[in-house]
Length: 76
Image (tube, rainbow, N blue to C red):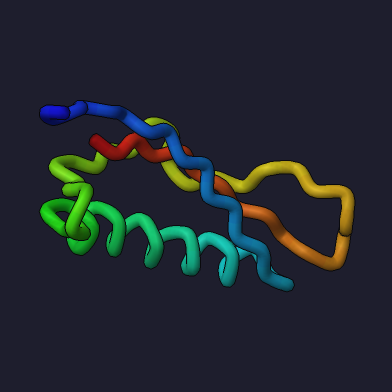
């Protein structure tokens, strides 16, 4: 069948009881995506590149007891 090239956009939201906790968790995930996911693969797929589309930032959330931090990434 050949090779297919696909670009995926992935939104990741994290939640914590504090703003600092949510930002810290989002930063950890960003670091792992940009360093560990690139070059990884399975028997049917390989991730050749990961890029940040929208950097982690605090986003509104209805529950005032939680802080939401979200980011968007692309994977190729």
